[in-house]
Length: 259
Image (cartoon, rainbow, N blue to C red; front, side, top):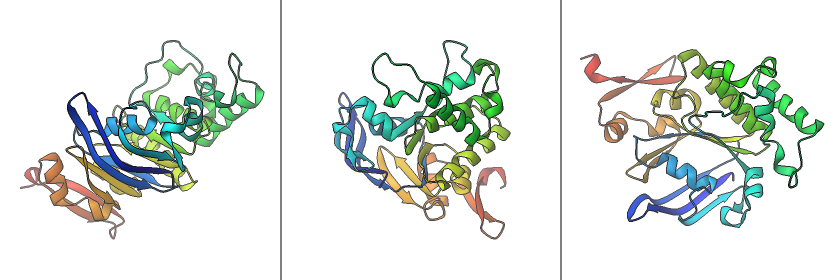
């Protein structure tokens, strides 16, 4: 089991954000997390990553209680791709990826040839090795996001958390990033990513987790979870869920736009 969360509660001061969250996410699974702004998606991710440490309940990664792991041990189990990334220096792409390979290095040690090889192999796996010597700030937003995926791979963790990875991307780069992420799950990684697009969950995810008012509202396959009623409840908008291509894919259509 990749991620096991049992009776998780979290509060900012007196304001409780997460209420009794219980989920199990198996290996080799892509999970999309749906829910409106402010519902607790990023807070849940920060708890899973150990960045919010004052939660109650249990978070286990690959059978290991998060509370019992050091920062380095945690980095060996789980990697993180943030919603946005603003580099301070104009590193080459290979160096950006190389930064994640130090989980097996001691204090004040620098990455060696095998670390550089691991970084380059991660770029090859994502299909962007041709960008290795380009400056990170001089490539497109979609290419930058793929570089961050490669960096997470080079970290060599089996679980990846992604906070709205396509929120600032155009349509083409969105498809490229999500297709890449879906393939990585097929290859055995467990990936949890948040999105505001139910259609993305239908097309790419194995499971959908829906958060509403800080609680698990639903968890299961997208076809079982995402219904007209659910979208209306969590987003306060009326939609019709329609099936295409012999039910190989489904889409949400706002009713008021076709009435």
